[in-house]
Image (cartoon, rainbow, N blue to C red; front, side):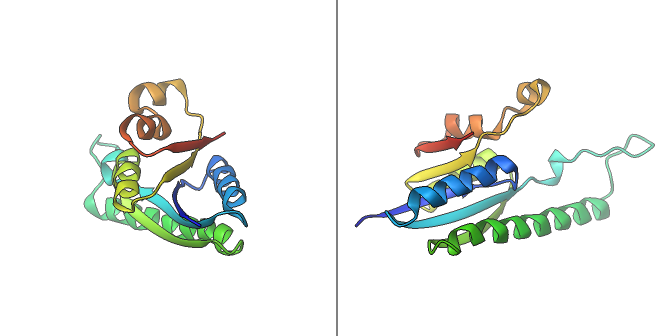
Length: 150
């Protein structure tokens, strides 16, 4: 039986939870599978914070925010890898830093996965206009089949 290696991209949202459960159900008992759970920490340049003088926050505060985001990422990865280990599916977690879509595409290629699984997540019209959704950008940039779970 051939091994299915899939990457689950998660941000910890309900949509990502549904994607994880779908992938778990898809691979449980019928396919030999390995799941890589990926959480991407956005770098500080995504967190423009102004103080009263209109300046970007100091390096110490940015460092604290980044440490907090890394800690949250570790918690989310543990929670999501648990979904697969409880079902007897081989899994491991990764945390990356950078633009989420770029990192998902890069790591999926590095890991030689056959499938990317991610949730669709509604964004406001302004956010999509300015940033584009991560899911849309993965679909545009990536060359690996991607399953988007609503």
